[in-house]
Every structure is written in C-alpha cells, then in structure tokens.
Length: 166
Image (tube, rainbow, N blue to C red):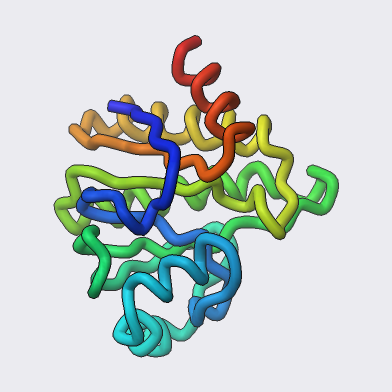
C-alpha cells in the first residue's frame, strides 16, 4: 500500500525510515542531518562501520533513538542534466532499499524525496520514479509492505498526491 505523509520523517512510527544520505553515511544537511540528530550519536558510530555507500546502493542500521527500528541509508544521484544515468541510479535507490526491507522483515517503510534537495533532481521526475519503482517492486515481488512517501514541503506533497491518485 502506498501512502502519503507531510512532515518530519524522524517522527514516523514505521519499521524503517530511509535516509537520503551522502556517500560517507556520516551525516550532512537536510534529511540526512535531521535523521542523525534525532537518532543520536549511536547512528554515527554504526555508520562509520559501514565504510560508506555508493550511489544507487543502500545499507541498513538500527534506528536508535528514532521511533523507527531501522534506518536504511541510500545515496541518490546528483542531477547533471539527466544524461548521466541519474534515472537508473534513483530507481536503484528505491529498489535496493526495498530489498533490504524485505530481508529485514520490515512491514512499513517511509521514504523522503530522494535527491530533490541539494542534489537538485527535478521534483516531478524524481517523484514519478519513486512511485513507479515502489509499485513495480510490490507487484513483481508480491510482498505486503506499507510504503509512505514523506514530503517536507507543499510542492512535493502536491506532486505525490497527483501521482498516487492517478
């Protein structure tokens, strides 16, 4: 089931939240910084042991001080005009995150708007990839999973609302 939420992903009571991380996994700005602050210093220590993460891939840690039991860290692509494999890398972020969810018996997961902040991915295109990737994963795997798209701003919320209602 695909759902929509407006607000702070660090407050969601789901099994896992997805962190739109940088390659180091050691925290940063935006969603990444908010998740690290809310989870506490244990998250940083756990991430240090993961030795980073490549673009389009995902790794998992405990949620520590978050309501979520797990954090799935994925590194989205930086937008370079669309001719550098960005769409495939972004799609991979969702697929790899969902694979980890299945492996860890996660039943509910929340995604932020990956790559649309400082990585400048166009919001409409990123949202279309997010929704189609998640729908395709659920259909191809036949798994029961509640997926929430957590939107921080009204623009994102409107885009996702249109995609989920079409």
